[in-house]
Image (cartoon, rainbow, N blue to C red):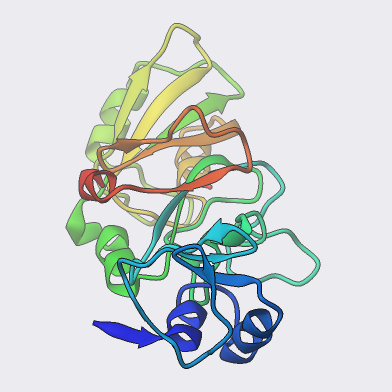
Amino acid sequence: MTERIDKWLSSRSSYSRKDVKALMKSGRVRINGVIVTDAGFHTADSDIVTVDGVIFSSEKHVYIMQNKPKGVVSVSSAPGDTTVIDLLPQDLRRSGLFPAGRLDRDTTGFVLITDDGDFAHRILSPRSHVTKTYIATLRDPAEESYVTAFRNGVVLGDGTHCLAADIEFTDLPNKVVVRLHEGRYHQVKRMFAALGNAVVELHRAQIGGLPLDISLSPGESRLLTADEVEQI
Ligand code: URA
């Protein structure tokens, strides 16, 4: 199937159709290496479309892994703040992108960014049992009693009963691995607060079966492959 290049590119980038027309007029758009200036030119998904040499993905939906640094907010737009979307390089930007699930401003690690609302809904629903794995650094050493408390479902300060979760100890007494099967506001911090402890550092290391790519430095993002999306 083919589609007009102005329509094709505007649905796969942050450019409007008007922007695309202007970019084309100034010779910045190439299809399979050839400059195309006619916005009515029809392109196929197998074509390679570039703007200033940057290739744009032909996929209908994209799934992006980001290693969120501290201080960045996981929303689509927040005037005055830096969002996870602001950190995306130009070739990964397109309209409709949003983070599927939030991390607190001071939490680091795996944020999934997509424009696929159905997929986001599926992975965020507690019924889908997509596990989120966190590494938490605690103010006080972890206690054995946490294992049973997590297994039984921690009751938060406001009376909310969390689903059963897992906690694993590490070589460091103040560092634990936590696996949650739901995503409540400030959940990890509130769970440890309910147990009389406090979280001083929090990092999301994995979503479902997909670990954060450790080659991504804080602030970096990359597209997921179809296999990796499956792993989630
Ligand atoms: N739980 C928290 O407390 N904060 C996060 O950012 C994620 C999970």
